[in-house]
Image (cartoon, rainbow, N blue to C red; front, side, top):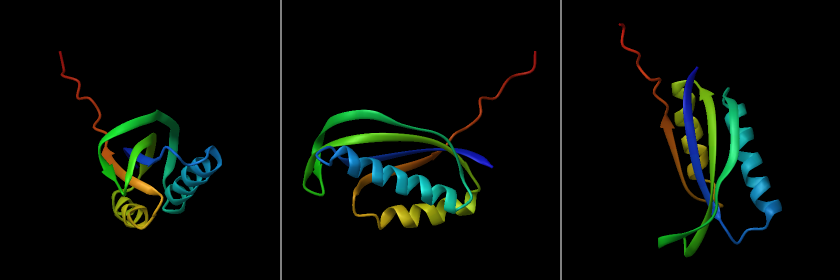
Length: 102
Protein backbone atom coordinates (compact mmCIF):
# COMPACT_ATOMS: atom_id res chain seq x y z
CA UNK A 1 0.00 0.00 0.00
CA UNK A 2 1.21 3.47 -0.90
CA UNK A 3 0.48 6.60 1.15
CA UNK A 4 -1.52 9.39 -0.48
CA UNK A 5 -3.05 12.71 0.52
CA UNK A 6 -6.42 13.68 -0.86
CA UNK A 7 -7.56 17.30 -0.62
CA UNK A 8 -11.08 18.13 -1.71
CA UNK A 9 -13.06 21.37 -1.69
CA UNK A 10 -16.77 21.76 -0.98
CA UNK A 11 -19.04 24.79 -1.19
CA UNK A 12 -18.75 26.62 2.15
CA UNK A 13 -22.47 27.46 1.99
CA UNK A 14 -23.47 23.78 2.32
CA UNK A 15 -24.98 22.77 5.64
CA UNK A 16 -22.85 20.77 8.08
CA UNK A 17 -25.04 17.73 7.39
CA UNK A 18 -24.40 17.99 3.64
CA UNK A 19 -20.65 18.43 4.17
CA UNK A 20 -20.60 15.39 6.46
CA UNK A 21 -22.56 13.39 3.90
CA UNK A 22 -20.13 14.23 1.08
CA UNK A 23 -17.03 13.52 3.20
CA UNK A 24 -18.58 10.21 4.29
CA UNK A 25 -19.27 9.32 0.64
CA UNK A 26 -15.64 10.08 -0.29
CA UNK A 27 -14.48 7.88 2.63
CA UNK A 28 -16.74 5.06 1.46
CA UNK A 29 -15.29 5.32 -2.05
CA UNK A 30 -11.75 5.01 -0.70
CA UNK A 31 -12.71 1.91 1.29
CA UNK A 32 -14.66 0.49 -1.68
CA UNK A 33 -11.49 0.55 -3.77
CA UNK A 34 -9.47 -1.22 -1.08
CA UNK A 35 -7.95 1.85 0.56
CA UNK A 36 -7.38 2.53 4.23
CA UNK A 37 -8.07 5.97 5.71
CA UNK A 38 -5.48 7.15 8.24
CA UNK A 39 -7.14 10.51 8.97
CA UNK A 40 -9.79 12.88 7.67
CA UNK A 41 -10.18 16.44 8.90
CA UNK A 42 -11.40 19.87 7.89
CA UNK A 43 -8.24 21.65 6.80
CA UNK A 44 -9.68 25.14 6.20
CA UNK A 45 -13.24 25.89 7.30
CA UNK A 46 -13.94 28.86 5.03
CA UNK A 47 -11.62 30.23 2.36
CA UNK A 48 -12.39 32.80 -0.31
CA UNK A 49 -11.17 31.84 -3.80
CA UNK A 50 -9.30 34.07 -6.22
CA UNK A 51 -11.74 33.02 -8.93
CA UNK A 52 -15.11 31.28 -8.85
CA UNK A 53 -15.30 27.50 -9.07
CA UNK A 54 -18.66 26.36 -10.44
CA UNK A 55 -20.01 29.86 -9.61
CA UNK A 56 -18.94 29.52 -5.97
CA UNK A 57 -16.59 32.03 -4.28
CA UNK A 58 -15.92 30.33 -0.89
CA UNK A 59 -15.03 26.77 -0.02
CA UNK A 60 -14.28 24.35 2.80
CA UNK A 61 -11.10 22.29 2.38
CA UNK A 62 -10.80 18.70 3.65
CA UNK A 63 -7.54 16.78 4.03
CA UNK A 64 -7.51 12.98 3.99
CA UNK A 65 -4.43 10.83 4.57
CA UNK A 66 -4.91 7.36 3.13
CA UNK A 67 -3.18 4.23 1.91
CA UNK A 68 -4.12 2.67 -1.39
CA UNK A 69 -2.75 0.63 -4.27
CA UNK A 70 -1.72 2.62 -7.36
CA UNK A 71 -4.21 1.26 -9.93
CA UNK A 72 -7.11 1.85 -7.54
CA UNK A 73 -6.21 5.55 -7.28
CA UNK A 74 -7.14 5.98 -10.94
CA UNK A 75 -10.54 4.40 -10.27
CA UNK A 76 -11.05 6.69 -7.26
CA UNK A 77 -10.08 9.72 -9.36
CA UNK A 78 -12.71 8.83 -11.98
CA UNK A 79 -15.42 8.52 -9.32
CA UNK A 80 -14.45 11.85 -7.73
CA UNK A 81 -14.57 13.61 -11.11
CA UNK A 82 -18.27 12.82 -11.52
CA UNK A 83 -19.26 13.99 -8.01
CA UNK A 84 -21.12 17.24 -8.57
CA UNK A 85 -20.75 18.53 -5.01
CA UNK A 86 -16.93 18.48 -5.15
CA UNK A 87 -15.61 21.76 -6.47
CA UNK A 88 -12.04 20.48 -6.82
CA UNK A 89 -9.85 17.65 -5.57
CA UNK A 90 -6.20 16.67 -5.66
CA UNK A 91 -4.55 13.33 -4.92
CA UNK A 92 -0.82 13.41 -4.15
CA UNK A 93 1.52 10.54 -3.43
CA UNK A 94 3.37 11.06 -0.12
CA UNK A 95 7.09 10.44 -0.48
CA UNK A 96 8.88 8.93 2.49
CA UNK A 97 11.91 11.00 3.55
CA UNK A 98 15.15 9.37 2.48
CA UNK A 99 17.67 8.93 5.27
CA UNK A 100 21.33 9.13 4.33
CA UNK A 101 23.64 6.54 5.81
CA UNK A 102 26.29 8.01 8.11
